[in-house]
Structure formats: C-alpha cells, structure tokens
Image 1 (cartoon, rainbow, N blue to C red):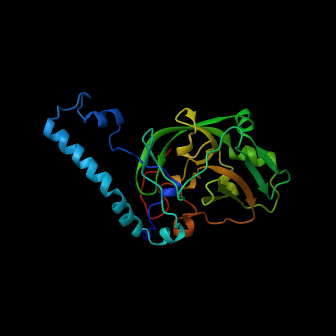
Image 2 (cartoon, rainbow, N blue to C red):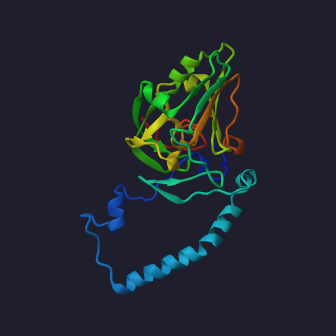
Image 3 (cartoon, one colour):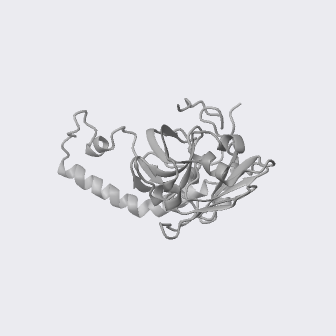
Length: 267
C-alpha cells in the first residue's frame, strides 16, 4: 500500500530547472532547430510586466508555500531556502537559512565512532586517495530525474577500512556543516562500491550549491540519502534516522522500492 509522504525533501536533493532535455534549447524558445520563435514587442513587454509582478508576489507565495510544510516547517523553523538557480540543470536547496562556505584551508572531514583509528581529512588528503567515477541517473523521491550525471570521489568503504571498523559496528551516520542535516546507512550499504565521498560532479569540483566541497553520494538510493556539505562520518551500533526519515521518509531509500513509488531503478 502506498505511503503518505511528508513534504518534498528539499534539503536532501536538488531539482531540475527545466523539463527540456537541452537547457539551451529551452532558453531559446524550444524550436526543434534551436532557433526559437520571433517574439513581438507587446509580448516582450507583457513578459517583463509579468516578471516584475512575480518578483513582487514572491514573498507572499513563499509564505503560502511554507504554510503547507506542516511537520517540516515545525522541524525547520528557519524555513527552506530553496529555488535559487545553481546551474547545470539543478536547483539549490537547504533546510537551513544559510550554509557556511568551506575551502582548502577550513574544510575537514572527520571519521570517528566505533573505529580503531579516528581520522581527519583535508581536501588534499581526500584528493590524494584512489578516485572512483560513477555515471548514474540522479533520482529524487518526488519524481524528477537528472540522467547520466557523473560523480567522482573516494569510495566510502576505503575510508572505513582505513579507520578500522570495530566488530560491534552496524551502521554509519553522516552529519553536515550546515548544522542541521544528517543521514545514515547500514554498514553493509555503506560498503557498496557505488557509495562515494564525492569531490567532483559533472566532471568539475563540487561547488558549494551542490553540497561542496565534499558530499555523500549514494548512487542506488533516492537523492535525499546523498547528504550535502559532509563534515563527519561516525560509525555506530545502530541506524539513526536522518533529517527526512524523522519526518516520515524511508530509511532504506532504494530507487523504485521505497516511499510507495514505482520509479524505474537506476543502473
């Protein structure tokens, strides 16, 4: 039986900006040959007027939207800061009002918990480790998909092996430097070859808007599992539900097999 879902997981994933597979063509007006259709002066003026009205109405529309968030609005009293363009076919989402920027000097990734060797990695340390590149569809639980998106980084299993996981360990918890978001995987899930601590997306360094400089990437699961702005990996003895799981989303978020959806699993 299909589950009743909490509000769309803004903090867990990014979203397509356009329905057109070719963003340039969509911006040009959508003609098959990419040339678009001539636009008259009155239409242009009307579009400008409509745009101005949209900007003026935006605060009221946002408040109306926030009022529909229910449990999510109570969980996140700062409000969702989504719908800012981020380029590359995605949009920027956060469950906090703002997220600090981290760079070569300030970024650290900690591995702790039920491990023999607590570790702290700088960006240079992570880049020096063997890198894995995956090309998969990015799939959101709300239904949108960004096809064939490359991610590259260090396999999570490599960091766990280096830390020396203790026998009583059963799960891995991820926390983020936005100060609010978290996620978890079972230890078995975390050791999959298609789970990365990602440093690059679309063959470019992972930018801040996409969760950079480092994010989790869980290829076979819905994108809310791929926590952005990753700062800590903690090995635990049980699975702790993450931000959106606490609001009703599945802890095991396999594409096509969770949250009552029938999406085609990515390969």
